[in-house]
Amino acid sequence: MISLIDAGPGTGKTFSLVYGYYKQSRQLYGRIEPTEEQEAIFQYLTEEYSQDMSVCFFAYNRSVKEKLEGVLKRTRAKVLTLHGAGLSVLIKRYAFQRQVYNRTEKHIEALINRPLASLPWKEKSEWFAVKRVCHYLKIEALPATQEALDYLILKYSDLASYSLPGDTVEKAAALLSKAELPDGTVEFADMPWLAAKHIRAPLYDLGYVDESQDISNSTYKLLCKMCRNIIFCGDKNQAINAFAGASEEMYQRIQSHSDAVLPLKMTQRCPPLICDHANAVRPGGIMAGPNNHEAIIRTLAKPSLPEILKGTINPANTLFIARCNSTIINLAIYLHTKQIPFQIINKDLADEIDRFIKKFRPASLDDLQSKLDKWIDRMSHSPNEFYAHSCQDKYSYLCSLIATCTSIDDIKRFCKEAFNQEKQGFKLTTAHGSKGLEAQNIFIIDPPIPLSFAMNHPIAREQELNLDFVARTRTSGDLYYVK
Image (cartoon, rainbow, N blue to C red; front, side, top):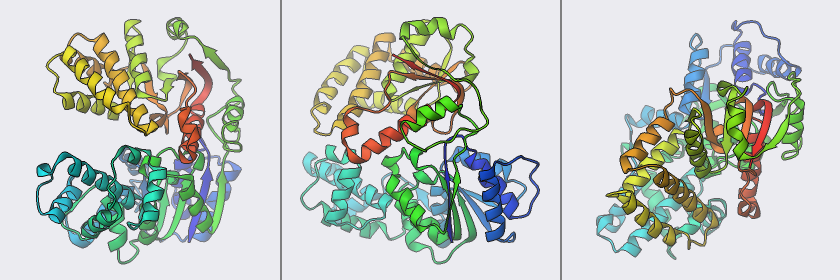
């Protein structure tokens, strides 16, 4: 049996799942005063599921997994990440599986019977394009067909930046055939895809799946095979990870397959004015709850920021959100010059900057700038607007760092300080990184959140609107737009 808790932002999704499990398993958790929606969910769980069921909680990432393990440590419930669940299935059946990043490349070399590095540039780039296609075919759990390829090109904008050979479908089919055979190694996309193909019988009576709007088709198939019964909980308006397979289409499939759909729309976080503001993007996406704060929504000029931030705004209760990484870096530089403490909380961006600089092997800042200029000149001619924008974003934040710092080592020192997770100050993140976070004061930098050109793309448009919805609903107090 499949059930869906159709939730909204700030409604206590994770808490409702955990407390629902305690109710379902007849265990004591503590006294709470549930909302009417939560009470209906708890009643449903106790009526439909028995207390002696084997249970597994599935978390979207490792940090959520660790939090769940903390609150479930006295129970018999298992906690796994979605990809960890796939890996556990493969290990259970085939013993240890080493995670690698070149499994598909090894398969390509086996097909062509020579090292990839020995191929002419054009042929090698075509094989890397096919490799990317296979990555998305695994995420979507699709066979290698022309119809599937057309769908991938529509959904995954980066594919337009690759030169796909005429026999892409045939090459992808050959690679998938090799990838289906376990060999002691797995790539990230292999974990749910391979596990779904090789699992023999359900491992759990009941699975609780949080953030289910972000799961891919291959993960959905794996979960349905791992668990006899599943309770999904998610918010279709917060599906922002299309690059990893998430989509409104996937959420609607879960909804259509569900035996029961239970609403959880009353927010415990956002004030009424913020709810109205968010519902203007996604009508009916959130319902006002107990927070009666008389919120303000205000537009500010960037030069006024220092005075405001040095006033009564508490850094511990404040979050800055931007659409692009370059905006975050530029804001960090600006705050640094004004001697205002800050912390960028996107660790992935720190790693990206480090990898990107190393890629150019610069001898000096001038050398790095010269190589960057040549690189962006090539990349800006891409027919794919999404790819060209991503390249321009990287170019912009690196140019800003070059203009601010005195050497390559100085850039590294600045980044080490900016991304210091123990540092106190105003927190900065992208709209993607803000999901799951909240603060009393939210500042959205360089609005609007949606990219104008992306609004013309049918799938990207929905993602952009969802990003805007996510950004607006992070606040428990006031919302500021900074231009």
